Amino acid sequence: MTEVVISLEIRELECFLVLAEELHFGRTAERLYLTQSRVSQLLRALEHRIGGQLVERTSRRVSLTPLGQEFVESLRPAYAALERVVASTQQKAAGSGGQLRIGFQGTANDQILAAVGGFQEQHPGFLVEVMELPLNDPFSALRRGEVDAAVVLLPVAEDDLALGPVFSEQPPALTVSVKHPLADRSSLDVEELAGSVLISVAPPAPGYWRQVQAPTQTPSGALIHRGPEVRTLQEGLSMIAANRGGMLLCRPTAELNQRADIVHVPVTGLPDSALGLVWRRGEDTPWLRTFAGALLDEQ
Image 1 (cartoon, helix red, strand yellow):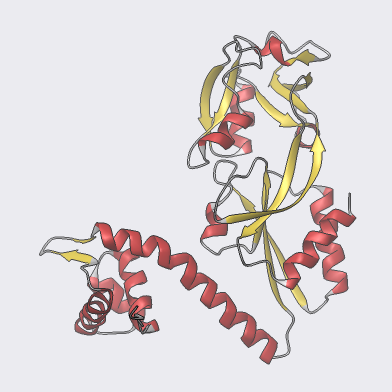
Image 2: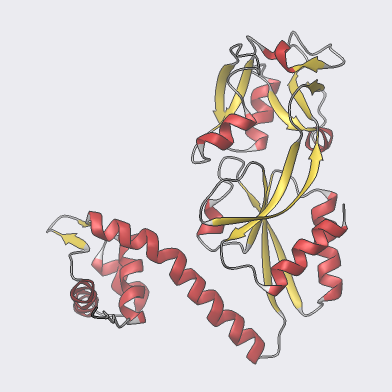
């Protein structure tokens, strides 16, 4: 069997990634401080190396071919991982501790903040940053390399992501307007949600994840209507206050979002909600494992 060896030129890959974003040779050249002819040369060299056309160029527009689109989707996370390795090595060479970026959905609760504080105390040379993630997009920032790990609502069933510690398991509550027919109840069974409207989470969150946050039927199969789609928790709370539907929230989140125009009614018969720490598969660094341990220590 003949072994195929493919050499890689980082400049060609960088040029292609920028061109895939800009879809314009002039702007790509400006960003990379190159001439347009040099951008064209790098692209041709990469296409020759790949053995196929990656970009279609006409007098009016630049677009990716299907092969180019597939290539850029696979290349982006790999290139981002390479950049992180270089940056980490530079930090170590300079004697600095490094950086850990943690994303979170909704509200950074006391457990997350305590874990950040505990990690920072143990590793004062490390810079820990936290970043809020959209409710409707729990995984994209992680895949783009904008965060090293993310605290997200379960479930997580993504082939390219690894699930670490699970924590903050809490019973759910139905959050509704004070004008809602169920607002005066002290508690609800999940079957009593039949016929109600639940505000749903908009894409790009995957369908299985959206279904858990806003189920379309009760365990017995009774219909639950799907209401407006929202991208953030604050959008959801606004829809609730306008009596457009309810949302299932974990009790800590509900308690952190007390308002005069909404109420939170405990719901029985549903699994507890939970948070999980996730990261890109194969990229669980020692620092990330240490932070995961700090999360568990705060339970």
